[in-house]
Length: 158
Image (cartoon, rainbow, N blue to C red; front, side):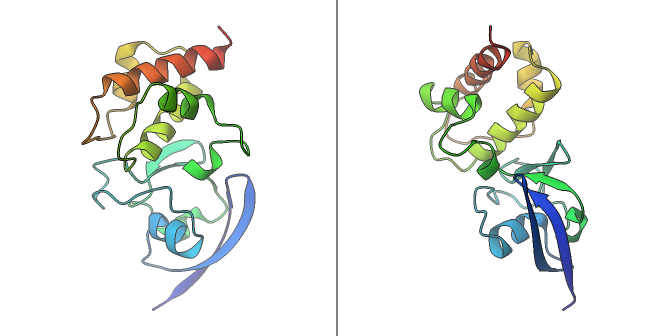
């Protein structure tokens, strides 16, 4: 099995790791780096549970080969908070009970971050479209949408 040396920036830190050429970024994050926040829900890019930001773009890490991270910036759920200070999205998800089992939550949070980075004041419809690649089997989506709306207001300082 061929292995590749990868140097990239993950959650603001330069990291290096060895990975099998055929390994997904999700597997490398979880198995090589111990970043277990991204979950494998489907393995086919349909559920969003493994979502990360790659150079600021939301991607399903199960569909990205680990060597493709070379020289790139990766943000995982572990990089969303700043130390003990939760990101406003994390705070509103907790306060609004916009989570249950937690399998989908990291993906929803990163999808919401990508959306709010691109559009700080989205409509409800835009939020629903922005989160459409994420599936939840436990909650209704209304609490999640409301949490994103509340975080949007907080992030804008409104």
